[in-house]
Image 1 (cartoon, helix red, strand yellow):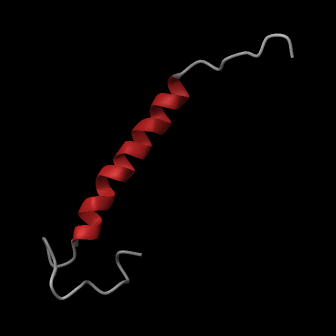
Image 2 (image 1 turned 90 degrees about the vertical axis):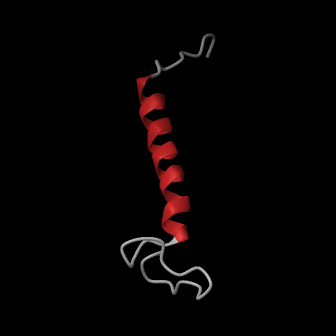
Amino acid sequence: MEFVRLTGAHLGFIAFEWVTMGHLLTLPMLLGGAALIVWSRSQPVASVKGA
């Protein structure tokens, strides 16, 4: 959605005439989410005893 929404006039573009503050704030969240997925896939599956 960051590519189609209008940027606030007071913020403008940060770099390359298309990178906005929303892009910069979203990037760490995407990287963190990807890291959590990779980490969780490397963990062994716990077995439930007595079920």
